Length: 79
Image (cartoon, rainbow, N blue to C red):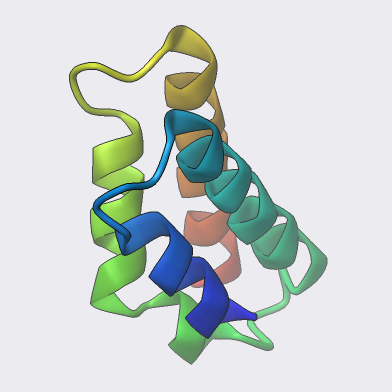
């Protein structure tokens, strides 16, 4: 599932809705496995890059909000 998310989020022709949905799903996975079960997977560089791009210029308030929430749950799941 994470490989699919990576492909979708890194696609140059993706829409903002894809980024927001992908980040939301990533956050849901991190929240579900908040005890560190997928810690190594959540520490991949593409995830950090996706979280940065979700908070970047040109993104809507809703996408930025989703990226911030996802960053927090990933941080908790990898602590």
